[in-house]
View (cartoon, rainbow, N blue to C red):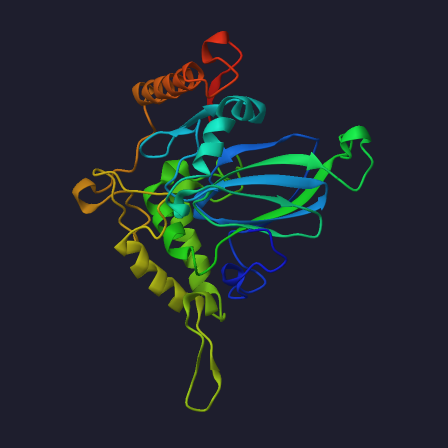
Length: 314
């Protein structure tokens, strides 16, 4: 996935003022990073290291990494409280997953270096560890363990994930992130409606990512409007998720196209409720049981009952 070319998911189908995107610059230290997660709101992302290398681990949509325990509706995720604990406790299970007979379920790994741009598809579980700069003398190991790691990153929406974004904004309102703690931001209940409004007001764009680039009888390139792209995405969203990372529970099917309704017509006006304490307790118990089994089976060098290992909800 690390490439200087971002491929069709980054086709120039969005104008310069593309909505629902942001660029951030993160500066972190050696062996810091982020635990397993799926990027918010069904967005794609790219990440470009400026200083230092990053080691990435990916799991395909619908394939949960070892040691990660999401609730059925995805409201809560229970996992080791730090990257180090995950490596100590679940690394052996991860290595076994590399041998999965179904190659589509195998994890992917890569190291992104300064000058690379890495594409993170929506719905993929991923974690990253900053591993320093091999070009700086770090002593016997040959790796710099002193310097910071600096990278640029951006989450965005394109034609390839637009239908899932719309479905998510309608059916997973309580999972929408990035705006709840910002008073000036559009709040989750209104985001789907305002997002659609912004798309419909964009004048023109090319729509290669939906396979809509054509030539008319005069040989001129046909340019679609965001409103046209939105209409096609709305239809796809009604047909279901385009990514295996999300499923609709029997009582929570999305009514896409109406941002005021969080569920299907049988549950009109009722949005997904946050996972209750009972469900959280069940997820936590499953996580601890799995950790204990791993230790007893000799799959981990850290015992879950030793107090050296802990889970947290994200």
